Length: 461
Image (cartoon, rainbow, N blue to C red; front, side, top):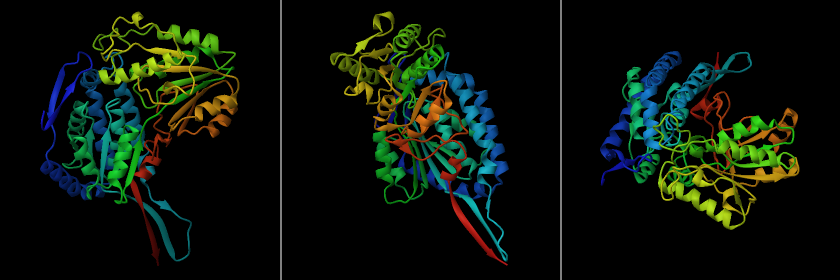
């Protein structure tokens, strides 16, 4: 399509739907509407804004069947799993709204005779949310909810793989009665998106996507002196200590590696296991992985769907082939998964051992159903290997020793440290990354600090 795009469903490789891009005039009109609505919206009491946003969350929850179907058809997540995203978005949104009033309240200072002094958080203006396809509702709401609660207006530009997510979000917020112009959605190509970032009417950009995309966003925003929140890639690691509960670690790490076909920025892509536990861990991990059922995600019995597109699956196949050529051992025979077909988006999960950090599979983001497992002899070796990455999103430590987890966690170069869990975002905790995993914060009360500016009031009697 010359002035639009088609969504190819990974289920069958056919065109699912097509959409037109917004014209420059439509973009200009959306910016004008957002600016016009922002003053009255920010003047509304925060409690009133929260009430409207709660009603929008109610509307999204009521849409669960439609949301699940849209997720499955657009990205291939099994229909048995897609409804979980609604449960997750409800938890995150309601938690963020529950802390909004306190997070946005004035900061009072100690009494000084003859003066009244306080700090007030004021909205930035118009926030541009650039959302990815892999968790199309969860990731979008990470930025949308706190931005709106703080009194900003929001423009959403969603991935061209998931336009239905944007449309359902717009429908839900409109049904809740948000004033016109407060929340809008645009469909844009990459060039038009970067042009919008550079537009003087945008006051903050919340981007979730690739490292390369993050660099492009920063470049487009250069010289504008606006905030840019970047949630980028990951090569998240796990360390299984000798005192870990084996069954629990295996069950959770298999899920952390292969849920959503491994297409999660905080999915587990590399595991380091104490040498004493290594043989039984690998055996149990492989056996659990073989229990997945790869197939059509519209089938309720399917537990592993296709990757989002055939090119993504080809990239992971390339990492596997390169590792095997360098001496790695594959523990999963793709023939065990009948739906696996070279050249297609359907890719069997793979577990590799005899891997090392010279292989791409241990240092380059895979973003697919692939994990490498290495034995380690000590905490120190595990720590060195976990930090040997250009990414720093999350890391998990599996142990019965909380003190050891904290001690190691303090030395890990990541935004989040887990103990005995992984691949989860707690909305009460800040979601942030270091190194090439990005910068800025979403979730927790810290998200409100990022989406507001401080104004000081210094009043003399």
